[in-house]
Length: 448
Image (cartoon, rainbow, N blue to C red):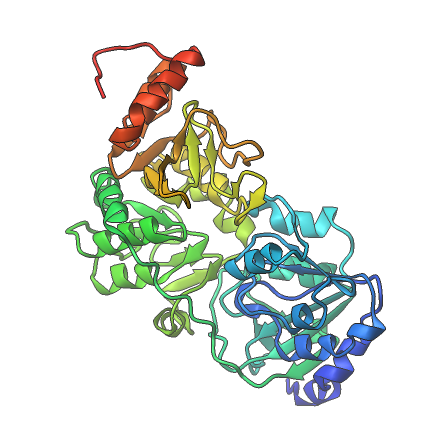
């Protein structure tokens, strides 16, 4: 069937398309690399005509024009499922960025069953294929759920979006669209490879010690997970697999080194499984039309019961601080939101449920404050207002540059002792005193 006639019928300018948006509407701007650009510029022009337009986003990659046009947030109200550096910059300037707490694996269901109906969904897609489908690009995530829930669906075509093979829910048919806008085909946003410090590398080395042939790897974002990926690529490990939320350049390094084959996975053998990809052009070129890769919605990739079907699942994620009880904060500094829960809790659960699997939470032992003093990231209690990302009952291994500690089955004094051993040596005495005051210290054969 030839869909050119239908395509031309639905093709409009960006200015024409955004006329459907009314004051008070809920709209979705597209997640990650699908964030609209031409449609955003067109909507920004309508700032004086609109009020209380509520916008959903996830990991804002660009700086939207609606932010610049409406710095007070009176016309356009920004909501995020997971904050990016750009979201934080806007929030720090005094403009409200409203975060919605999630378990990422549940997000498609939130959209389908719980949130306010979406009046207009707008997202970048790849060009239409001969069967009338527009590929969502490297962000399957919850995108199909958004399109299903929206009253109006507008796509902005970008020929530079890589064609990401599924999996499922990786594309939308022209019959499901209301309007098509042809954008300026901007290049894909580049996320530089996170720089790994010597602290990151040392912590990563403790994780590598726990790995063996045939492991399946999940890497979070940041210097430490990236350091793990680089070390894996340089190791003599064999037949590793990939089942992750976020696909990053480190996986391509592992694949090119012959370490990552995906052949021994229990599910999706031979495939790198992911929910979204974010990195450099090398990554986007690799996933484009590549049958070695399979993109899925996040309620598949992140669902612990599915991810854990892979034996020896090793999950590696970052934290901001961990208290002596083993509670992990990975998303806020006190009440200031840094990122979000994302999929960390999903993969902490999945790593432990996997046969032979393990979950690692990594953090540097300390940081330098503005006053020049060293502050511990292993703390007596979490900073007031800090969000508990991983409860003490589910966190498995905690890792710093001073070692690793497995918390499962440990009593409160064992946890305090083990976690203090991960702290900077100059700060351990203070932590011991705090643990004594809290009644969770029992001095044993360990001397710090």
